[in-house]
Length: 235
Ligand code: APR
Ligand code: ZN
Image 1 (cartoon, rainbow, N blue to C red):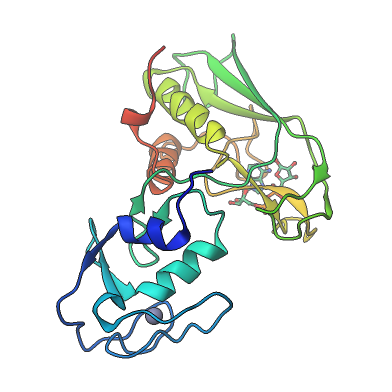
Image 2: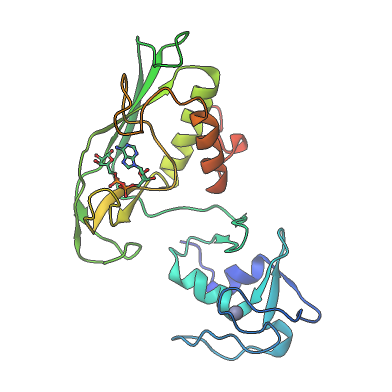
């Protein structure tokens, strides 16, 4: 954890706004010309001059205090994501619990990828106790269906997706702790926002092959998490 306060983190990504537009802050739905609608613990007064800021890259404007409140509600990793367009400032990380990611090539072809072998990824996460970054700190979480096996074609694009998934794993973005939409169980390990194929030769769940758009979809989902080819350092 870096030594910066939430206010310092938010300020780093903001530019000054001379006069706020006659629009509402989309975090609190109150006018940008007035005070932040966020009344929470630790919200002190801010001077009029710095009450509204513009995110440096995308230009979206919010109350300074609304951005600080949003940052405080997240995992406080030094990064910020624009709630409007999802532009990421800094390096986004998630709250995936400790575990293991392994992969190897298996000598079989996936439906739709007859000309190459297959990469099998094996994720293993044991159950544990939730940390401060999870929905119910101190409470146990379950981990169902592990080890989870996932498949990618061992093609150039499939290997690129693998490299970016390894980055996503290091940034704790592949899994999360929450409520499973499949089973309804709460306080359990669930897939995060990056889709995986967990069926090899069939497609009974919809998470199998063939699926011609799959690799491009995953690359887009990774981009939304802030992970692109530039992040995949070749060792
Ligand atoms: N394989 C791959 N992805 C899945 C699967 C699956 N069998 N089931 C759901 N997903 C995707 C969903 O499309 C959604 O985008 O994961 C995301 C989160 O769904 P949840 O149901 O909340 O996730 P989770 O509980 O982790 O997954 C349910 O997936 O791998 C299996 O063993 C696992 O049976 C469990 C199922
Ligand atoms: Zn606001």
